Length: 298
Ligand SMILES: [Zn+2]
Image (cartoon, rainbow, N blue to C red; front, side, top):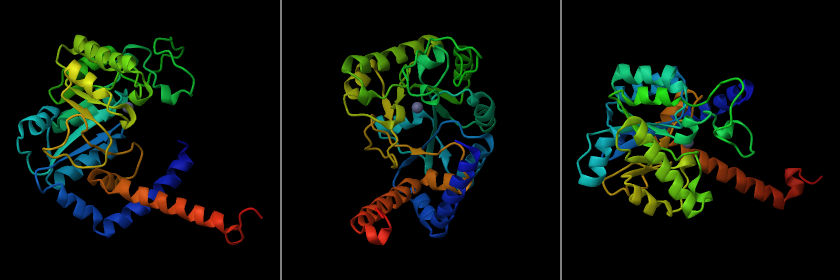
C-alpha cells in the first residue's frame, strides 16, 4: 500500500473509529465480551510493534484475560467456563516480522498466542504468493535476493519452543480450500499437519482457513486428521456452543491507527464498514436510475 494512500485511508478510518467510540458502541461491545461466558478471539498478520503493544495494553487495562488455544479447546469440548473477558490471540501466515516485532513483546508479557503456519511456504522459498503477482507460484523456486516473507524452518522450530506459543496449520501453500478438489483439500490439511508435527514434535490440533473461506467439505478432513479446531474470520464472539470447526475471530489489520484497532478488537468495525458499503452501493444504484440528477451519462 502506498504511503500517501495509507495516510489518507487511516485518516478517514480513524475519523469513523473515533465516531464509533464517541457513540458508545465500543464500550457496549466491550461489555458484551464480559458477559455470558464468551471468548473474544482476535487475529493479526504482522502488526507493527507499536500497534501490537497498544492493543495488548488496552486489553490489559480493561481487564481481559489472555487464554491459550488449549484453554479454548477446554471451553469448546469440555464446557469449561472461560475466565471473564477471556481473549485468545492468533497470528496468521508465519511472517518473518514475528521474530523482531511480535514475539519479543509476547514473551515479555507472557501472553499465550497461536501462530497459523503455511508449512510449504515456510519450507520453500518463503514468499507469500499474494505479494508477488497473480501468476502461478512455485514455492520451491529459488529467489535471487534471498529475501523471504515468511519465517524459515529453523526459526519456526525456535519459536515453537517458546512456552507462550502454540503452532497451528494454515495449509501447505495458503490455498483457499473452497477453490480445491476434495483430494487437494486432503493434501493441504494432512500434509501441513504431518510436516509441522515432524518439525516441532507436538500434536497440531488447530487450523485456520486461509482468507477465512470454507464451504464445509473441510470438516471430514479436519476430523480425519485429528484437528480439534478450525478458525474462521467470522465477526462474532465464541461461546460454549460454537462449532469447533467454525471458530469466529475479529481481525485487526496491520498498519492502522489505534482507534480503528479498538473497534476491530470488540467487533464493531466490520458491521459499520459493511453498512457504509451497502449504503454507498444503494446510493449509486439510485443515482444510476436518475442520471440527470447524479450527473452521470452526460
Ligand atoms: Zn493467511
